[in-house]
Length: 106
Image 1: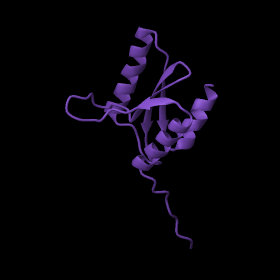
Image 2 (image 1 turned 45 degrees about the horizontal axis):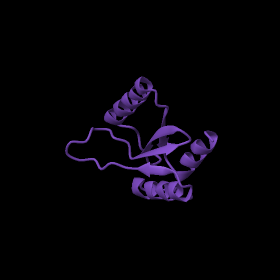
Image 3 (image 1 turned 90 degrees about the vertical axis):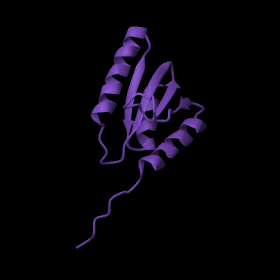
Image 4 (image 1 turned 90 degrees about the horizontal axis):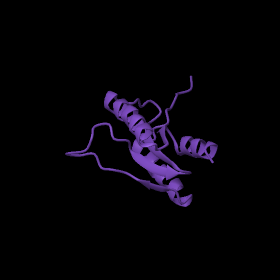
């Protein structure tokens, strides 16, 4: 019987790949460090692309959004609507998820 091996790519590795791709494409992005005084559920990355503000939450293959993350993203969407800012939410498990979603929006 063949042993099954799972892809053990960490969130940190995925984030590095995403940031590298965003830099190559000259897409403005930033991250905020979680810590004292920051809001719970803050996404891993933010980006501005084609007039939209993106919240990118990075998860591994088996990762799931926490309730705090889900609440933050819901509030982010509502705040964007109230302010007239077009926002997009992306839960990415790989750099390919980001590439696919961003290319669909071009």
